[in-house]
Structure formats: C-alpha cells, structure tokens
Length: 94
Image (tube, rainbow, N blue to C red; front, side, top):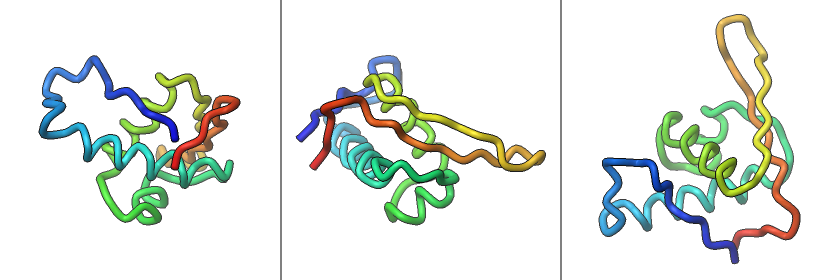
C-alpha cells in the first residue's frame, strides 16, 4: 500500500479535517488511472464517484509531485483535455 503525502503547499489545508478525504480521493484516482487509459476530468470524477473536476485535477498534480508521470493531451480546440497516468515503477495503492 502506498502512502501518499498531502500537498505541503496548500495554505488552507487542515490535516485533521481534510487529510483522510484527500488521501481517499487520491487513492481512488490512482487506482483508476493505473490502467493507463486516457480520460477527461469529468470521466475520472464519474468513475470514482466523488469530488469535483478541480479536485481531481489537484489529485493528478499530487501524483506528479509523488514522482508519477501524468500525461495530458488536448482533444478539442475548446480546451478539453484528457489525462493518462504512467505510474512510477514499484508503486501501487490498495
């Protein structure tokens, strides 16, 4: 089981209030995206069943900070992006 650190640069983060929720959402995003498929933020939110698109985007940034590669690709001129996770070798989340 991987322990994900909470973001240290979040001035409004209160670990006692926000920690478990963020770690839970991060684990859900990691497990879903570990299959290497491309997804929009809306698809990720729908498939994990919680959070906002802004929150999902923040969790993808957290995964980058943890050393994973998160690829993104524009699919429309309107600004729609898809994301794909390339997990760091030896990392898993239960």
